[in-house]
Image (tube, rainbow, N blue to C red):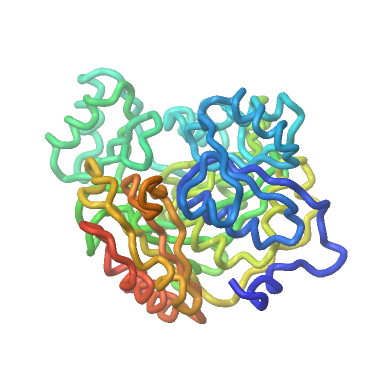
Length: 433
């Protein structure tokens, strides 16, 4: 981003925060998006990421660390003199990494292990929603074949079967095939079977310090692997924001009926939620319903939401980590739109092929308004080339005056990237552009 783009991220005088050294934990496109925004924040004096990836290494100093080892992460944060630790992925949060960092007296953006159960256990999330009167799908929690069969029979097709635990975005099966639904259910130690929710899906993030809740702008992602929403579920193949078809009052309604009640209920239970609360929503014929909660920024929605956020990111995250969100000025957003297209490896979401050389990254970055965020990449030590190292390899993100403009730029950038066997959807945001 040039100097003009950088200047747009600076807050007006009087809203500045204390300069901070930031450590981001994770190594995917979500963390690259976070690092990119933080690198453009004038209040960030040093930016570190662990373990990072080949793209993150261009905007932050990367460090090796086991992201699931809370003590190791806390030791690294202390050694770096970090003023703020941002935990990106869900697995470290559920493993208690944020707790380990907090114990050392270092502000951390991310919920405790107990609060992260909101994502780590769908049964726990259903319990919280029931207590808080949050609208969601009717469901059964099943642990035996007999319970599974009874629940599938009660709801009928299409069947919605969710692994109770973490599954990297691929633990949900929605199918009309009873045998397939039952097979997935029986493969899970504990499973949530629920009614199918009709209507479009929306992702809405909110930053919270456990009391104050600040919603971000909504986005929509594309979970299926293939065009036309066909194929298996993935971690997400693309996203766009804003949502021109959504009710202008949607964010306020979700804040009032979903986000604030959930945060209040967790605080009432003695497990306050501080960090990023992600509500996956269905806009049904009967109103808004929660599909799921996540305890961290979603991928690839983060890429498009942060592309539109003009308020510097460090101050927002630091306020959440230090309990001062209520004093933060209102967030500022660009008037334009953003679109992200995920480039995935051969055979994703099965067992992806790794090691394929990625070419054309500089050419893609040269497209006006576009940039490439790395997910599953690494730099080959022998050749120096960037190669694929995961399923979702890149998130190509572009901003534009509207969705059509942003989409055109994103796909132009995608067309310049070359990686053997790579795949991407060609219809991201097509219906709304």
